[in-house]
Each structure stands twice: as structure tokens, then as C-alpha cells.
Amino acid sequence: MKVLLITHIFPPAIDGGSKVIYKFGEYLKKQKHEILVLTSNCTSTDDFVNKKSRPSVIAIPPILRLPVYNFLRRPLKFINLFLPNNSYLSDLLKVFQKGPVFKIFPFLKSIFFIIKFQPDLMVTGPLPTTSVIYTNFIKNILRLTQKKSCQILINASFHQTDIDFFKKPLINCLKKADYIWSLTDYEKKYFINNFKIPANKIFAIGNGVDDKFIIKNPKINYPDSPSLLFIGSFSAHKGLEILIKSFSKLSKKFPKLTLTLAGQETLFFSKIKNTINKLDPEIIKKIYLINNFKNKDLKKIIDQSTILVLPSLQESFGLVLIEAMARGKPVITSDIPPLKELITKTNGGIIFKTGSEKDLTSQICDLLNHQAKSRQLGLNGFEFVKNHYTWDKIGKTLCQNIFFQQ
Image (cartoon, rainbow, N blue to C red; front, side, top):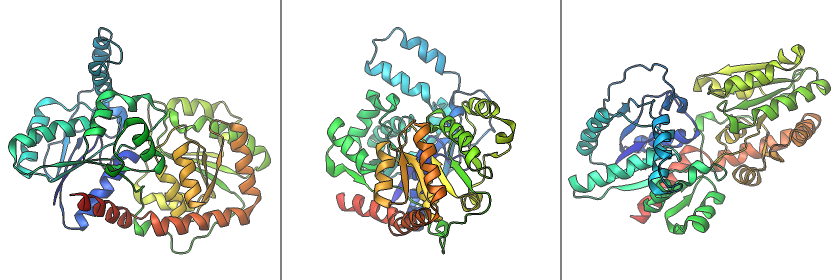
């Protein structure tokens, strides 16, 4: 089978939404399928509208990295002022304001490679980027140039609390898709009940980790200096300000406790640093920032921690939670539906009331004070991830569903 992957960014740039596309592609390659990738040359989603220079990238198969227009956000906003609010065209322009918007001539050149490639399946996502819209456009081109049909599999990485996910063109793409790869049962039920998408098109399969990422002998070390860990982009919706304030209070009760924040810088990063800089200097010394670490360092970062904390206000799945569980670590996360579902399935951690600094502080105290409970949660999560959330299992299940439907 020939598979075209279409996503907004691609390794070495990575985020949760693009990672599921990339890892499924890796699985397909191991199964001897042919892979072609269409993506941007951006290092993060901020680059879609940020004018910082990026290296010139030539589109060469099997990865077509296309340059983007990063000055269109304001012009598109201006045009939107003259359009009826919530109209299809208005929503379409709002999607393209987020990007990426591929430059025209490199994109047309990439179409030539795609037509020559003749894909059987296109795997795309996440929402609310333009990836799914480009995919639908390419499918229409392929209809005119090849006899065999090309099907679309969308991984939406859906955030129910983010209004950008509800634009009409994006929902239309979901409805037109041949298959939808849902990360949670919650997401699948939401699509069925709210978007009226047939249940037989949606596969609630989840997310995964590599077999080599899973620790052989899970154990939780409680050194003299226990450590809290956050992994993720430094974005507004990650709830980092709550975690930082909670850590400030915890430092008084646990003087040797440290906090490590590991992730990719965003435009919101300056606000996070401002929040940290307002703390007592003695507390600031206990907070460690790790920016743009390499994927090979992820295991070491997790292994040096005591508890992983993900205080997000919105998530589609919470990949870092199962990555921590794969290393035998207990987790604490907010009670938004996708994360609550994951904790319920794995019994690998505890939840706190979203946005509640007081409740988060209480739950962290509970795990730090009860080491036996922490170890058991770490073991529970480890066993579940090992048995259900490896990429070989996710890829095999997904392929079986797609091939069975064809």
C-alpha cells in the first residue's frame, strides 16, 4: 500500500498531534508500505505566523517540507471583518489564519510528486490546522488523475473546549473522511452525538509508545530531593501557572522538592518566566527549565522525576501521561474528560479539579506522603501501557480496522 502522510509539522519538530501521524507512518514502513510525507518546514506552530527566519528547504521525496506564508494572519482577519460571522467562508479564513499556509508554487510542485506517487491512503491531522483541508483538496485532484480511489484517515486530536476545532470546513472534512482515528472513547462519542458521524467510521484506538521506551523493571525512587516533572509545550492551555503557584506552596512543606519544566518554547513562554520570576529567589532556584530537548533524552528526564504532573485545561489524549507510565511513574492530571478517561482505564494516577491550585497542591501532597500508593499507581500504569498502548499494538489494530472496512 502507498500512504501519504499530511501534517502541519514533522520531526525533528514535533507535537502530540503530529506525533501520532509520524509514529503510524513508522509502523507502516516496518510493514513494508511505501510512505510519502507532506508537511511544512516549520519548527513549531508559532512559526506559522512568526516571521523568524527558517532554513530554506527543498521539497524532495519521501518528505516534502514546504515553506509557508507567515504574514497572512492580519490580512485574513481584516477580510473577515466584512464577512457574515460564522459563515463557511469566514470559518475557512479563520482556519487559514492559524495555518500553515503553504506557499503556492512549492505546493503545486508537491502535487506533481503526489500524483506520481499514486497514494492508496492519506493519513492526516490534527485539527484545527489546515492539514485536513489540504488533504481534501488533494483527494479531489487525485480523482481526476488516477483510476483507483484514495481514502482518507483523519486523526483529529480533538479538543472539545477549543472553539477553533468547530469551524465548518473542519467539521465538513471529518464528515467526508473514510475513517477517523479517535484517541479516546469520549472523542468517538462526541463525534457521533454532536457531528452525526457514523460510528462504524470511527476507531477509538488511542495513542502509543515505542516498545523500547518501556522500562524493564519499573520502580519509583524517592531520593532526598523528590522531583515534580511537567513535559509539554509551554502554551497557555497547559495550566503551567497553576502548577508553578502550587509548587511555591509545596516548597514550604517539602523544602527539598524540585520542579522541572521540559518542553518547547512558545509565544506564551515569556509569561511563564514572568510567573516564575515573581517567586521567592530560594524557590526559583528549585525550578529547572529544559527547552527543546532531544527525544532520546526523554527517558532520562522522566526517570529522574518522582511524579509527572499535567495540569492542562485542554488535551486530546495526554501522550506524556502514558510516556511517564511506561517508565513506571505515577501521574497527576486535570479532570477534563480525555485525561479522566485515561486515568480511569490505567489506574496509573490521580486527577485534580481543573484549574484548582488548592486541589492540585493537595493531590501532590498525598502522593509525596504515601510512597506505597505512588508505587502502586506507577505499577498499574506501567502494566496497562505495556499491554495496550505500544505502537505495534496501535498500528496493528488500526490497520486491521482499515483493511477490514475496505
